[in-house]
Length: 174
Figure (cartoon, rainbow, N blue to C red):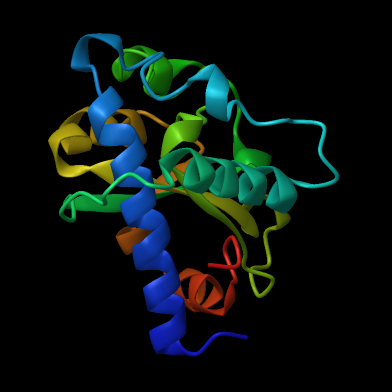
């Protein structure tokens, strides 16, 4: 299990990689597709969700190899609980497609898969962690606000048990 400093460094590295990949592709007029490229499309039939997200993070890292890292881009972390989603489409409509009909954020901004085994409600034990740049904060917040089942939430609004689970996670093995 990584210590606090190691966990923070891994999270910072993966977040920077997500920003390096996402920001040159950001098109406000096309939030539905700009971060859902074929080059990173996840393989949804992998052995488990952690493998799917980890492989995407590693593929993004390979695609960035040799490219200089951009200065840190301010942003916010988003948690998506796929086992709690109801597929109502409200967040998709409210965000012009940033979220899909299943409330899933675009795969280009995925950071990692986290399991919070101390949570009683099984629907909220596992979550996908995604990065959102500050310039999309209001659009994404509208999606979070209209999501009745709360399967998409800002990480900083979640209870401490989720932050501890994130700290304990290995994300994509740095």
